[in-house]
Length: 554
Image (cartoon, rainbow, N blue to C red; front, side, top):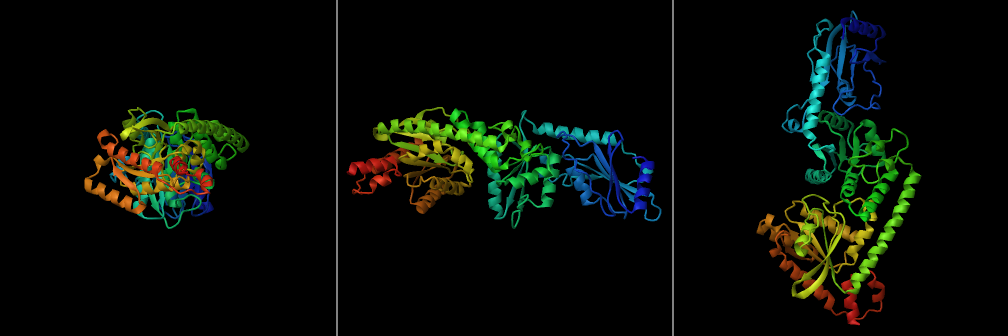
C-alpha cells in the first residue's frame, strides 16, 4: 500500500463520512471498491469463486475506519471466511482526514497437534500498527511463506493419496458424557471410512438451531479452524435436513455430510457382491432424493466423488428427481428378484431340517472372527466398523453331533439410517428364519450397555424379538474376571437371558458356548405344546424351531 493510495482513500472516506474499502490482487490491481456506512462495509460474496485448499484467495482488503478503532471481529471473520490474503484498516484522522495508523492481520496456518497442545490458540496474527510512510512489510514474501506453510501442513496429514481430511462436529443437548461417547463412535466411523480426522468440536446447546445446528459464532469458529488445518470435509454427528445442508453449504465451499451419509459411504466402500452394491445404491439414492437441489450452485454438487459421493456416482448426484425415482424403481425390482432367490435358498435349507443360528451384534463386536474360528473359514475380519458387509453362511457341527447352519450378518449401529435398513431387508430376512440368535457383545467396549440396547431395539423394530437369544460377551481376555461376571449378572437379570463369555480368537473358550447353544436348540425342538387351533395363523411369524415343535406336538 503506497502512502498516496492510503491518503486518497482516507480523504474520500472523511468527505463522505463512510467507510470505503478496496479489494486488491497480488499485482496491485484494484478488483473492487466497496462503500459502506460510518460503522462497517459489506464485502461482496467471493465464495462462489473456488480456490485451492492450500492457497489464499489472492486478494487483500484495505478499508477505512472513521473512529480510530482497531480491527473488529467482523474484519477478522471476513479475513478467515473469505480466505483473504490480508485485512488492513486505515484509521482516518478526525480533524484533517489524513491517514493515521494502518492496522493489519493475516491468518495463521497450524496443525491439529498444535491446537491440542494449546499453541496458536489465536488464529490471527496482528501486525504492528504503522503509519503509511513506514510500512516496510514485504507483502508477497509474507503471503508466499504462509501458503508454503499451509501446503506443508496439508502434506503431513495426507499420508495416502485420495484420503479426505475431516473435522468432526457434535451438537449435544444432553450430558457431556453422552456427547463424548457419540463423538468417539463417530471417530471410529471416520477411521473405517479411511478419513484423516484433523480435529473435533462439540457444542452443548439448550436447543438445536433448526437452520445450521450450531450457533452463528460456532459456525464461524469451525470454518476458521477448517481453513487453518486444511480440512476438505465437515462431518456432523447428527442427521442433517435438506435445509440445514443447504444453509451450511452456503456458508462454506467445503463438503458437508452427516453421520447417516458417512455410514452409507462405508457401506459403499465395503459392498463387494452385486447384491450388496444394489442395496447400498438404493439406500443412497433414497437418502439423496429429498436433498437434491437444482442448479449449478447445488449444495450436494460439492459431494461428487470422495466421502459421501460413492455408490451412485457423481452423475446421480446431479440428476433430476424424475430420473432418480426411475432408478430407485428399477433397483427396487432388482431387490425383489434377489429376495426371491434368497427365499428359494432358505427353502432348500429348510428341507434339510438344519437349525439356523445367526450371529448378530453391534458392528466391530467380532462376529466374523467368531465365524472364522468356529468353522475354520477365512471371511475378512479386521478391527474396524463394518469390515464385512455381505452375509456369510457356513455349516457347523455342534457338540454331541448336532449339525447347524451358522450365519454371519451385517453389523448394527445406533441410529442406523432407515433407508439402509429398508434397502437391506432382503439380507436381514436371513435373521428371520433363525432358530437361535447369538447376540455378540464387545465386552472390552466401555459403551457395551448402549450397544446392547441399540441391537435389542433394532431387532425389536424388525420383529425379530421372539427368536431365542444367547448373549455372548466377546473379548473376555481383555476384561478382568470380576467386571466380566458383573456384566453377565446385570445382563441376565434385566432381560431374563442366558449369558456366557468367550474370546473369539481362542477356540478353547467356545465349547461351553456351543454346548449352551445346542441345549437351547434341543429344548426348543423337543418342548411339548398343546394344540392351538390358531397355531397356523401364528406359525408364519414364529421361528422355524417353534414351528417344528408345534408340528411334533400334533
